[in-house]
Length: 267
Length: 236
Image (cartoon, rainbow over all chains, first blue to last red; front, side):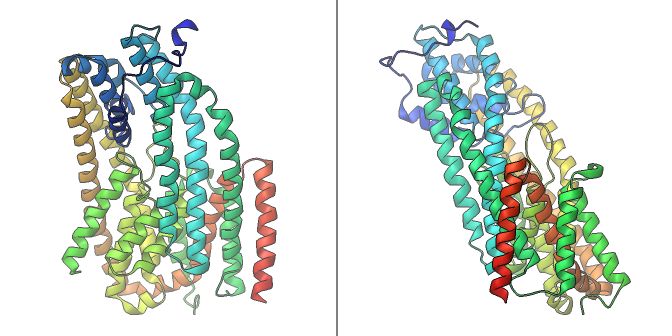
């Protein structure tokens, strides 16, 4: 693919997709993984999200359906960041419909795959490894220290402020600015991700502090067990191919066996 | 709410969290802390839901829904574990006072989460057939097939969520009833003695995930020392 084929349109180029079409795409981005499968992963959801744009650019439903066939192939990325890819592809299809230099279907497929990887490399650390743990830890800390249920709102409202907001912005910016928007994303969101992870590490320290010095006080044995649990989690999680589910079952059964063997415990 | 209405609402909630986990919205209703709180509220024991949800939240943060890996089904696991714990609380008030149902709820949640993985894989394979059908329809010029397939995908996930919640909750309640008839007190002792270990392990694995790299480690340890000193000073 040459540089010319992915050149950006001029600032005065007329846009054919209106606010209603963009809103239709935005609404469909929330169902990106409805038909998630091992062959195409988010491919069908991607085509569905793109369908309002393609319908607006094609003369009828049948032509739009056939134009969407290449878009229903393999695609996978972070579900929030996928909105950017939907916007970028809509921009390319619109330019193609205007007769401007744009990517053909094969080029779009290659760009989509590259976008999927690069957007996942930005979105997974930001949303799964920074925003989600930060909000979840705030909620857990609130419950442990203050018996507060408000963490429920913290998780739902906090995450969706980021995620819904970014879905809307990513779609619109991807459509308006095309690939040039993606090029600067990592640089812009990287420091934010690092900052949020630092903040999450601080809140994790708060949670650990509530285990070692519980709010209602604890016996030395309970504090020791808390410390042992932390050490086990830090040192052995991921070892012996055990995931959190297997570790959870092993721990609960061990605790039960221990409590049954030593009936004096906990009295 | 009547017992029957509570159970029906729990099953519907199981379907909702299964759908929210990936197929539709991802509004984080499926996070264990949220799922547990709502389940607890449905059973009139929100504090049980929050306690179980908080512990399970720590464990589930180690699960990343990336790539083709089928994650543990913590959303439905939390609903089942919380509902089972709430049901046992009504059954055995003595063991409940010591927290016995919480240990059992955790066990039920972890087992449900693990056993839910093959079901998720099965669901994803079923979606492959749906995807192939959509492609055939699109080639034939039928645009509406896309929307129908999406709807079918969401409905299928919801149905799986409801069914899996029903099956897992029935088994958990039945086994819990049998176990608590003989050893309810042992569960209570287990919670009293073992809950710090479970909390600690969950926190430990989150710490491990968050402190990769020198700077996060320095920040974490500095913050921990400061918070411990502050809490000890306040406790004194």
